[in-house]
Image (cartoon, rainbow over all chains, first blue to last red):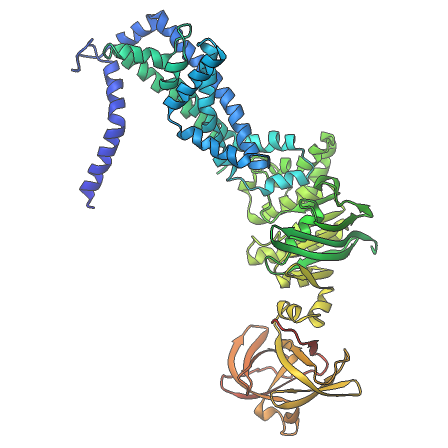
Length: 257
Length: 368
C-alpha cells in the first residue's frame, strides 16, 4: 500500500468514527431551529436546556440512577471476579460462562425477561425496577473487566501474603483492592455510561413516575431532532470525557512505570 | 545446633495423575543450610511447598520443632518463604512490604519501625525504604523479599530458586550474602535450586532429587566425591562413565577391563565377579600425558587416546580425548609448577591415567 492510500484509509476510518459526533457538537452551537446549514454561533440551545426544569429533573434522575447502578454493579462484579479467581466452589465454571452469556445476550431479551419477572412479581415499574435492571446489565461488564486484570497479577503475591500471616480479608483489602483499583474504576465508568445511555432495557422497565435521559431523548427525536438534543448530547459527551480523563489521571498515572 | 528442626516421615504428594513426590523421610537440623537440588519436575518445589504448608501431603507427617504441623496452615508454622518471582507487593513501598507481616500480627508501630529498620540495614536497603519495588533492580528486589521474610524471625527460611532471575555476577555475590545472612541469623535455610554449582558452594548438606525421590543426601563433598548413584554422579559436575564387568576379585581388589586394558581397582563395596558396574571418573582426576613424557613401561597401566579438542579455560585446560573405542572423555588439566605449558594440540597422541582410588564404582543401572 502506498503512502497516499494508507493516509486516505486512516482518514476515512477517523471520519466514519468521529464525524457524526463532530456534527452533533457543531450543530449544538448552530443558530437555526431546523436548518442543517450553518447559521452562526449561539449558546441559546444550552440556555433553553438549562431553563427547562423538566429536562434538568430527568438529567438528575439519570445521574442518580447511573451512579447507584454503577456502584452496586461494581461491588457485585468485583466480588464475583475475585471469587472466581481465588476460590473453588460449586458451579464455578457455570458462573464463569454465564457472565459471558449475559454480555452476549441481546438487550431486548434481557429487557423482556426482566419485564416478565417484574409483572410476575407485581413490582410497579419505576425507579427500583430501573435500578435493578441497570445493575443487572452492568454486573457482567464489571466482572469481566476486573477478572481480566486480576489474571495478570502474580499469584505468588497472594501466597506471600498468606505466608506473612494475612487473613483472606486482609489480602482482599490491602492487596487485591489496591492492585485492582484501575480495573474497578474502569468497570465503574463503563457501568455508568452503560446506564446513562441505555434505551432498550430502560424502555421496557421504566414507568411514568421516573423519567430518564435516554428515554427522554428518544421521545424528543421521534418528533424530529431538536437543537436542544444536540446540546444535551454534547453535554453528556463532555461529562463522560471529563470523568474518563480525571479517572485516568488520578488512578492510572499513579501506577509506577 | 544438632537438634532436628524439621522432620518429614513418609511424606508424599500426587497432583492429579502425576506423583510429584514419592514417600520421603528427611530430617533437617537447626541452623543448617540445606539445598534441594534437581532438574525441573524433580519434586524439589513440591517438597518445599509441603514444608511451607501451601500444599497438604497425601501421606505422612511433618514435624517442625517437635510439633506436628501436618494439618496447620502456612501462617501457623513459624517459617517464611522467599519466592522465585520475589512476589513483592507492587503497590507498597519497600518499608510497607517489609512491615506487612508484622502488621498482620498486630505488632505495635514503634516495634515495627525498629525491626524493619534493623532488617533493612542488614540487607543494605535503608536508603531505599520509600521506593516502590518497580523502582529497584533485580538484586535489590531480591533483598527486599528476603528482608520481608526474615523480619518475622522465622525458625526456618524457605527459599524457592531465589537467585534464578539474576544475572551471573549478581547471583555470585547474592550467594555469598545469603550464606553470610544465614550464619548471622543462625536459622535453618532450605534452599531450592537447579544450579549444582550454587548448591555445592552454599550448602551444609545437599539433597539431590530426581523424579520425586531424594537420590542422595549429604555434604557437598560427599555427593561430589562419593555419588550414590549414576544419576547423582552425572548431575553433579562432569563425569566420565565407563560401563564394564568385573573379571575377578582378590584381597579387596577387583579387576575390570577398560579399553582392552585390565585394571585393578580397590573393591570398597564388596562387588562380585561377573557383576556389571559403572566406573566414574571426574575430569580433574584424570591426568593426560604426552607421548614423550612417559616410558613404555609406564604406559602399560594407561589408556591410549587422541586429543580431539582443546578448550582453554584460564585456570584449566579442558581436553576431549577420544579413546580407541571411539568413546570420548573429558579431562581437566591444571596449570602448576611441574607442568606450566599444558601445550596440547588436536590429533596429538596421548596417554591417560588417574589417581588410583579416586574413581567411583557403582553397580550397573539400566537407565542412564
